[in-house]
Amino acid sequence: MMEISQLQDYKSIGYIFFFLLGTCMGSFFQVVGYRVPKKETLMGNSCCNHCGERLRGWQLIPVISFLFLKGKCYYCHAKIGWVHPILECLMGILFCSTAFFLQLSTETIVGLTLVSLLFTISISDALYRIIPNKVLVCFLIIGMIERLFIPQTTYWWYPVAGLLLGFVPLFMIRMIRNDAIGGGDIKLFAVIGLFVGPIGLLMSIVLASCLALIWYVLMYFLKKNKDKYIAFGPFIAIGSYIVYFITSGQWAFMTYLING
Image (cartoon, rainbow, N blue to C red; front, side):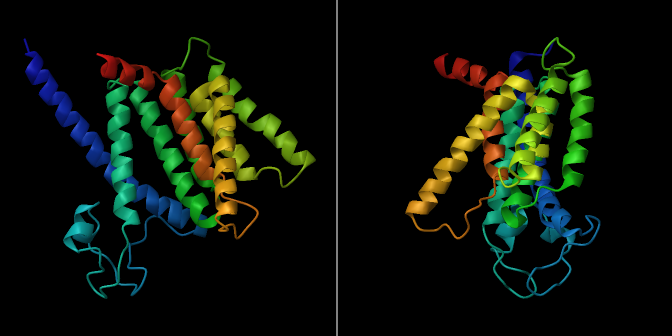
C-alpha cells in the first residue's frame, strides 16, 4: 500500500501543477480579455505592443520570460510592465488554492471554471467596459454541463433558479431605468447564478454592490473620479469569488486547518 508520505508528495506535485496551469491560463485569459472585445482573433500571433514584432514561444512563458527579459521587449527594449506577471501569478494562486481547499474533489472543476470566467471578464471590463457575449456564452455552456454532472445540491433546478434570478429581476430593472445596470453585468450575474445558485447569487449582488460603492466613494474623496460610471465587472468578480469560496466549503476547510 502507498504510504501517507508518498501520497502527500503526489498531492504536493499536483498543487504545483495547478499553480503552473493557472499561470498559463492567466496568460491566455489576459489575451482573451484583451482581444475578444476588440473582435480580434485568438489564433493570431502575439506581438509587442510597441514595435509590433512577433514574439517567439520562449518569450511567452508565463512569469519566467518576463524575468529572463528583465521586463523589457527583446527587440525594442520597451518596458512590458509588472501587471502581466502579477496577474499570471494571481491566477496560479487562485488555481492552486481552489484545488487545495476543495481537496481535489470534482467540485474543483467547477471552481476552476468559475475563477477563469471571473478573471477574464475582469480584464475585459476593466480595459474596455465590455463583458463580451462570446465569453459569457462559452462559460454558460460549460457551466451547464458541469452543473449537470457536478450538482451543487440534490435539487436539479437549483442552478436554473440561480440563472433565472440573475437575469429576470435585473433585466426588469434595466427596462425601467436603462442606466441602472449594464446589459453585460446582467448576463454575467445570470451565468454566475448557474454556478453558485440563487442564494449565492443574492449574496454576490449585495457584496459586489457594496464593494463598488466603497470604491466609488474612495475615488470621489481622492478626486480621481473621471467618470460617473465605473466598471462593475471586477467588483462582481471579487464578490462572487468570495461568496463561492464560502458556500463551496473552502472557507470551512481553511478554518478547520487553522484551528487544527
